[in-house]
Image: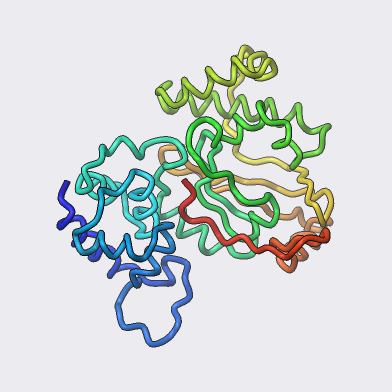
Length: 293
């Protein structure tokens, strides 16, 4: 562990990132060429005091979760992310899987520019890594945490409440699609410990999953028409498309309205409603998630 070199590296990466590239307003009278320390801390879900200590080569050894948040905030590429972990004395493989997964900068940059349509970045295990404001308005805030519970596939088969986003009559279809897509992801990851644990838990806890897994069906989920239940807008029938990273382990998922359909107006209203609770509770706006982990 080399905290002095870690601090120097963090500052050099902070200086090269503009607020626009990080999805932040540029503002006026900026005295630094890149991001301010408080902006990096905000994006990485860290305190300003702790991040300042890291840049000064002081403080305690950062956790894997903290390093992952910093890598996302600073838009580090794969080599830079690995270097960050090595400087902090953490194994590079610690960030390879799970909800601490590294978000590829190109995908995050594209997500920043999709401000008129719901969009999110997920892994091939269906863990949400980041999502924009409209995705939060349509689907609700992302689940954070670690382990199998972070996967929407796991929650789908173990938590009945997670299915409320879709009409009941559509549930069998989504079950089949999720299992077929998961099988492709498991093979892509060469049946690593993370995927073996996830599949093993699901086979033990869900007879439905075990039955579907036994069919051997496999199909990557690229795009389809979905019906999503929104608490204010009702059932929204919408197209869901996926753009995949080169290794296939991450995908940018975005939702568009079929031309001429009622979802055109529903998405327009969604942009107005945002994340407000119009059912009688207080207005709550959930900020865009950049460091879900």
